[in-house]
Image 1 (spheres, helix red, strand yellow):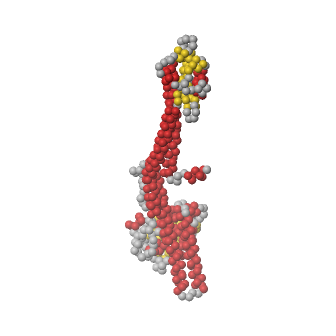
Image 2 (tube, rainbow, N blue to C red):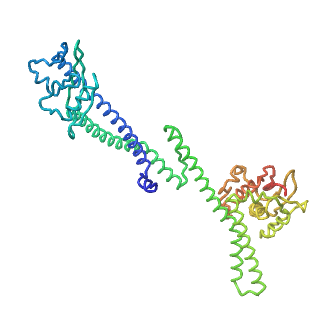
Length: 458
């Protein structure tokens, strides 16, 4: 049953609100109609009783109770007064309507009322659908008493009540139809801004637009809705930005191992190779593929916010071996020398090895790219952590570009002949901050460029 009712319920908010308004109006009109017709029935009955008492008073002037026996006086036009009138003295019938039999239902009801006394009224069914109202009036004289019972056909009153009831039902139907139509119209107009805002939010979320609804010039309810939609759009824009950032970072980080694989394959295909050379090529390709897998795992973990938990888990990574491994893997040009300067060989950082590689690798790549002859990677302990510095003797960072150094996609000179995408430094800083560290540029170093990486101690 519940499923059936749920299936019948309107699917739109406009329809549901209209149905609620229609149901409420129907209940209210039903109560008002019943109350109005009940009051009307009572009023019509009181009018009938007043009419009967007036007639009884008129008839009472024709009854003489001054003697030992009550008697009915003959008057002009007494036939009008005698219509639907019974006169009793005690239980003895003195006079009745000419058209009514002595054993009829009305005569028997009049006799019962005469016994009950003054001011008593009752309604008698005199054949469907006819009803008759009877009232008794007692008169007491010095030596005798009499009771006058008058009757009144209620058909005109009942017809009036039926007409009023029918009119009430017709009026109720018209009012309900108007209520439903006006409610749908009003709700539709009220929800029109909501539909517009929904369409705009859908369009803006698809393209990551900067447009927002704001709270000004809106009713309080729409202002709250606009604020909620603005927050949702901000989150969607953040997700889209992170998605683009992750795609760019993956392509940036995977470029180097892919280049190594392509170079090795081109070298291997250039001419027939010995088994030893082929085996060496396979090892290089396998190492590059493993590096790509590590890069993907590291960046995807960070994108899923797993890097925050995993990277800060208890454990330590020996810094110096990782630095040596990165320098050996760089493939520096012949003109550039890369060296590792570590005064504390057993220095440990509180991050995973793969994450440490992803933080330091962009700094080394940039240093080798711009160095004239030498790149130095040093590591030393600092209070509460480890500091890794990457120094080159290149031209350094232009002063005008220092503020945009860690902005994704920004390069100091896009026409410098290098294939960088401007994503390495932002990635290194973001990963370092994810584990409670920092990557920064040292502006005090003027003989080239120096980048500092601070990580928690292991």
